[in-house]
Image 1 (tube, rainbow, N blue to C red):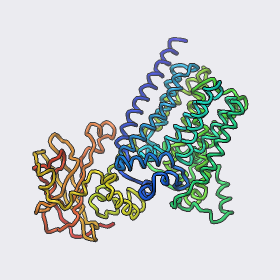
Image 2 (image 1 turned 90 degrees about the vertical axis):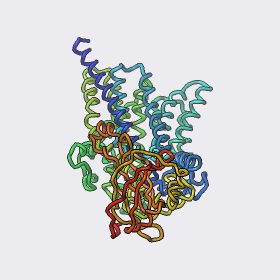
Image 3 (image 1 turned 45 degrees about the horizontal axis):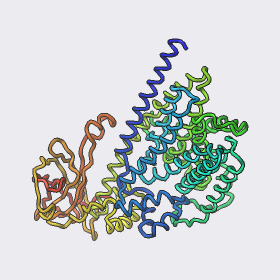
Image 4 (image 1 turned 120 degrees about the vertical axis):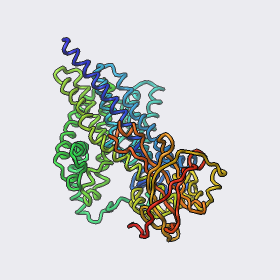
Length: 596
């Protein structure tokens, strides 16, 4: 190797290592600060069932035709033992996400068939694929990331143990048990997980597994399908999921390949949109994008070129990197095929949904697998190595704008979710805030009543119990100087308890040393607590470093449950087991109720 080639190789290694560190660190910050802190989205439907059924019934029921057996066991344990703490659920999901990444990285670095540059390039691809914020609609939610990571992790574990089923007894028995158990976990964590069985069968064929192993895998697939069909379905269904006209269904099914191409190519559409000033994808563009369609077709062609020769020659097994890469390609292609089949009528009624961000969780891993295949194949071909390495180094640059913008969006959603939770704690009906938590506010209010009664989720700390008490009864009357200061006003009126008017209080506050207060109480002139407020803010250094200073202020939101515009209310800090000596006067009373 010439001196120039050595220097170029070293530069590529350093570039891959630096890009990996930058993407991983930024991804972790964006995920943590953009996490879903309270019950949101479909979890209001799931918790409605969990709170009214036994743990076994909750686990066995299908939701929107998804079997969530294993994730619902985690949810039920969280409700039962940890007061429905959504932040804890997020950390469990992060543990599973890291476990998936480790399952991908360990065999890569144990592979002796590729060099250091290829390993560093593959590591970069895996980190980008797993921690790209384009998947934030799934990865910021503890419950959703548990579902999807259990499916991916179970599949990878089964695939990595698949070659060991060729060994002699009793090691082959151990391997078979791990493969079948992991496949079952993947199958009953989310409907897409059923793609584990065709993945194992295709890989098993390419690995030249003995017929008994292939028959065992086929039997496992059939048993999983039978169990899935027999599981009862919860009442909630996907809108438009029922087939009303068979001819219309056939026409929609004929568009299945088109939908698959659009799903496969959606990461390119979103990554390209993030480079524009007005970040977003309209429903029309999501349904008709030529970029998505073209990239999807190319992706399927590349997948065929990667997989079909292995099926014909049956010579898989020389490289752990290749096995991992093909596992990702086949499984995620199968997962998206299941999405196409299950959402046939849904996509017909709402064609723009085919490019919805929630599906990027699967399509991004499909392309991750294809890039890993390219790295593995190029390592032994000098003429192909540098084009592939340059492509790999360009990937984080190409997807970083969306990575950053989704990080911003997730942080803002975190703020909105906390605000919605505050309205529930104060027991007011601020529909505008609640719609962020779920598109059916009445469902939120019904389930929130049960959460309040059982002191779960946002009610676990008991802040709602302070309302109506004299301030002197809090913390046994302890007070201390906090250097508490700020400004706030009544921003509008919403519906309070029993139909009364409640005042919505917004403002900013700080404690000594620019610290952000966590909990605030709103007190009337007689010293009675009339509402609770909660602050939200971002560390100034973190804001400058990762958000370009867009979240540098400290804001809080609270409500005065029974608002009287003739009274003068004040706000006090309620951190550290004591009330602050300092008070903030609530200004600008209003007389009209804000629009719902």
